[in-house]
Amino acid sequence: MEQKLSPEQHLENTRKITKQILSLKENFELPNGWKLRELLLHLWSWDYQMIRGCKAKLDGKWSDFKFDHQEKGMKYEEWNDVILEEKRDLTLAETKKLFKETREKTISLFEKIISLPETIEDEKNFFRKETVVTLWMHDKHHLEQAGMKIDY
Image (cartoon, rainbow, N blue to C red):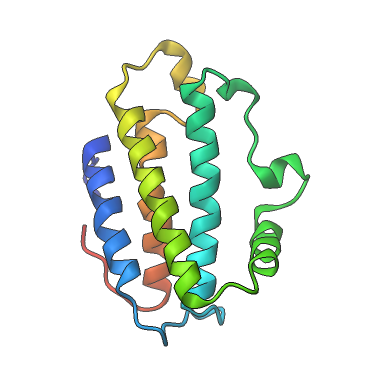
């Protein structure tokens, strides 16, 4: 049985896995054929969505929030393809920089979210403390697909 982690522990795991992702070798590849560049773009795109959602929560506008793929009426799997196509001209170095900067903003917003008291209304919100900080588990899933062991 998995141990229930506090929001702070989840946030620490996000920091750890971010370092691990940024240290991956250039020849990294996922079973679906994505190279490191595509993985970073995929993770960046979802970090960007989390930033948007966290800002909506902090601004008190979370009830109307939709992810970009929802606003466009797309399945999230299709969204991945759109992002990879939109950013196809970025080099690996540019992609790493984009991911790193966006992840730092994401972590900063997570810190703000978990420092706030939650209300009864927050129970209905995806961007509540206990949900928003689990982003690292998405990262973990991709690394485990590539056969990497993650022990957090």
